[in-house]
Length: 199
Image 1: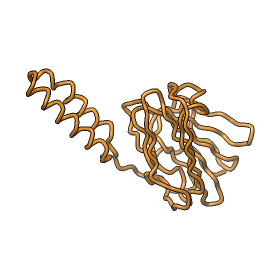
Image 2: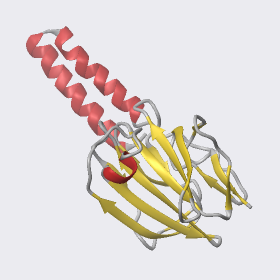
Image 3: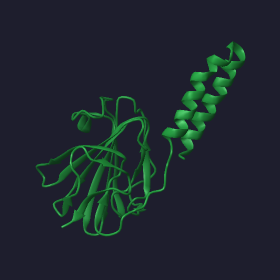
Image 4: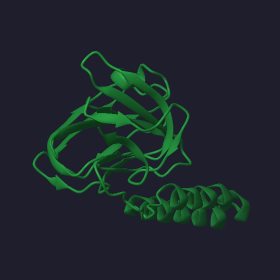
């Protein structure tokens, strides 16, 4: 459980209690339901991290796009709806060489424009002779990107690095040394689903 979920749930439960006391039990019910949803939303299950020369998904969700780009990299975009786990994980082990936050819009995260125009946080990990970049991208409902790491930090493959609150997207860029192992429409899980394998 991410600690934020406990804070939200406690605050909503207290609000529900006050509403129930002042206006009757039914008036507190919506807040109690929201508190239960927050506990569900901020869950953080353990994951089995695969071994070998692989890139794992940094996010739970549905693969929206697998696109070859002009710089010989492939972009894999994963969309997280409000029912997915929103904890993000490192795609490879190594050292974080860049963390770069950029303000932007809050378009629906499933739209292609969200990749460049929405609020986002770029994280670059270098290790094992490879460089993998991923972006935490805010969406229409997501209004806060959280990153626990900074440039210079060492990470293990599948290690927790942050989260995006309430519906969002993560884009991952794989270099030509990686063979992409997913297709559009696939469901993936952070830390355990393989996005790419070393050629």
